[in-house]
Amino acid sequence: MEKLRILAESAKYDVSCSSSGTVRSGKKGMVGSTVGGLGICHSFADDGRCIALLKVMLTNYCMYDCAYCINRRSNDIRRSTLSVSELEEITMEFYRRNYIEGLFLSSGVVRNPDYTMERLAAIARDLRTVHRFNGYIHLKSIPGCSQELLNEAGRYADRMSVNIEIPNEESLKMLAPEKDHQSVFQPMRLIQQGVLENKEDRRRMHHVPRFVPAGQSTQMIVGATKETDRDILQMSSALYGQPTMRRVYYSGYVSVNTTDPRLPVLKQPPLVRENRLYQADWLLRFYHFKVDEIVDEKHANLDLEIDPKLAWALRHPEAFPVDINTADYEMLLRVPGLGTKSAWLIINSRRFGRLNSYDLKKMGVVMKKAKYFITCHELTSSPATSLTSVNELSPERLRPLLVSKAQQKRAAEEQQLKLDFG
Ligand code: SF4
Image (cartoon, rainbow, N blue to C red; front, side):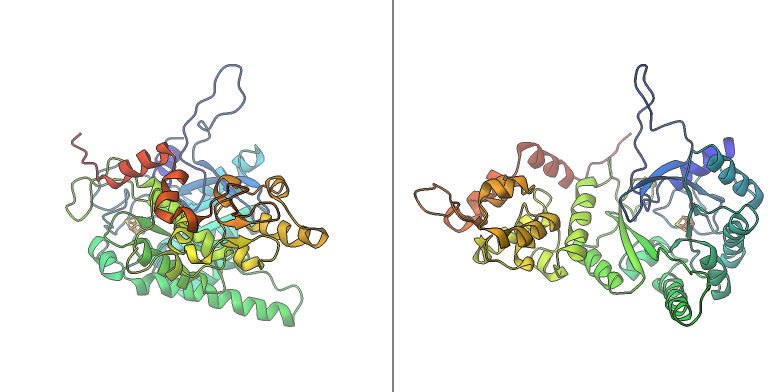
């Protein structure tokens, strides 16, 4: 339990599993709690199911000294290591007790990358072949390890990931002198190559086991270095261009190193910025936006007060109002307040008649936002309906109407770099 406590604590800063980090203990008369299951976090499957994962490190000893990491060599923390068999046993026992449905395993680098990766691969292999474990396995790949070990691990893991951490190589080298982009991109390329070769093999032969079937993911730290949101999103867009990259995660920098002058001292992680990056990421993946449309040279950072789609709409009033009854799918996706689901519903429903604002509300369109950017049936910007579009109001006057007081306050707080004198 003591080892698990230390190693789960060390693993919690990796955000590839989305919903970890809440603390709400069990209460009398209530069911459930978010504490108690050491190292257990929740993630989401492709079909939207929430699955519990054992999120733990094999060891938190590390020979590297990445300034932004709690497990860096020079940090004075309690260290521990689980043996391969101990980790396998914990996973199986937790699984049998129905605590978890999968394993998310990472590790500090001990001796050399191959030595560490060999152990991670052995755990995945033993779980599958000795213990007949059929649950989800997500392995962190160790930068700099050999191709053979990556191939071995990939045969048994569902997903593998290598963290880029910092989008700019110069900044990465400043904070993590032992790393460079080559050491991160090389394993990414090898995993991709393995997945594509495996696809080809499976086309030609039956019964070829799958290689990393859930693809790759990676993580970038936000707010530890001077990179703008534009730099981060350009990197994400390039990564999504690779056929096996499924998700890029953004992790607001948690101030785990308050004495290093290379790092900012933040009282709290930049959570609003992190959230805006996820929204922008969503626009890249599902809303057909390009990075240059979301952020450009003049607006290199995302607006913290409003979401990136609304920010784009306010910068481009000439594109509105959009007629809901005639616009194509691409244009509907650009209307603030409309999601992918409601855009499809609109396209499908308008074949049976002209849509009005009542229909849109029923489809889940957020009319509070959308009404300034659309026209539909009775909803036209005529004096009779007293509806004013973004053009008539002007973006400058519309913006405060769409930003709540709470949001404004949160964004103002976020922009302050709070010094922690404690
Ligand atoms: S290699 Fe990984 S575990 Fe080690 S210090 Fe760097 S980020 Fe932390």
